Amino acid sequence: MGKRREGREAAVQYLFSCDMHSEAQESQLETFWTLHTAKAGTRQYAETLIKGVLQHQTAIDEHIRGCLVNFSFERLSTVDRNVLRMAVHELLHCPEVPAPVVLNEAIEVAKALSAGESGSFVNGVLDRLAKKLRPNEPRHSRPAPAPNQDSEPGEAHQIQNRE
Image 1 (spheres, rainbow, N blue to C red):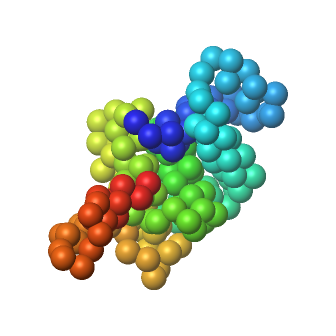
Image 2: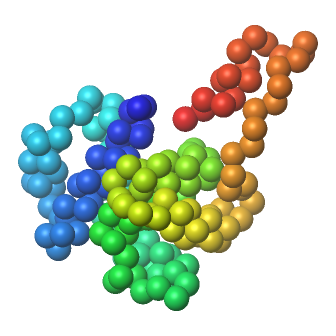
């Protein structure tokens, strides 16, 4: 598992904890890292996501509410709600991360940390949000082009492993 995926999972775990306790404080973040060991790069990425979500949570939640169909925000599972928050933050504030990567990573984190059909549910909500938040960007990964005589060796492999 890559450091960004680990960072995303750690961020969702921390946000879950904050959601369950109805509060988020900087001091709690240090306590979290005593319980959740992570390498420096993973921790740095997770903290960037955590701080971004907490800073923009009201606006993020409004975006999510606006895309729920026949479902209330309050009924979302705590894990799914925080996976969505993290992904919406990335869609809004991390333009260097392609939308397909944001969606795929959120789906995988939901599958790993949640239950049942969470991956499909998260996919549906984020697909609607990506259409609104990044209308000119594709939402699905494109297959890598087959290597040909004009490409460098390993070029197709590099395209597939951008994130």
